Amino acid sequence: MHVRRNDIIQVTAGDDAGKTGKILNVMTKQNRVVVEGVNYIQKHVKRSEKNPQGGRVQKEAPISASNVLLICQNKNCEKNGKGVRTGSKFLENGDKIRVCYKCGSEIVASE
Ligand SMILES: [Zn+2]
Image (cartoon, rainbow, N blue to C red; front, side):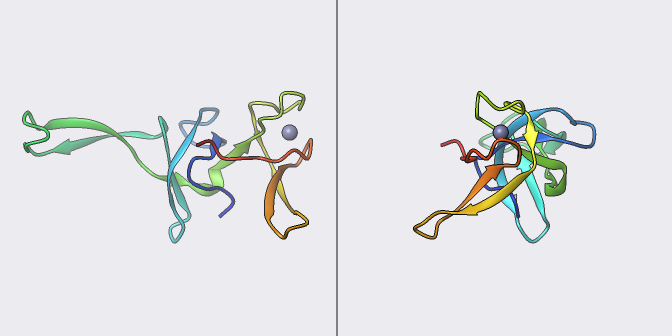
């Protein structure tokens, strides 16, 4: 999986292509991710204590991880704010980081 929870990504395919958002959940086995504000579905809920009216709520549904790209946060990069292909690099201490394919700057997840 090339993305992690809290990564900021851009959607590259499907109805939400072009949208950006934060990854809320990663489903490694299914190779799917849930992205904030992307792929809303109407979900019917029964009445409950939390939801006394019942009815419909909007909820993000998972999308394929192959349809998202990490966003480059380097302001000097020509791809700043857009989805980019990424590579990986190993630091001297052995940590693996993800870097923008264009500018080589590290891509970090938001908190
Ligand atoms: Zn870049």
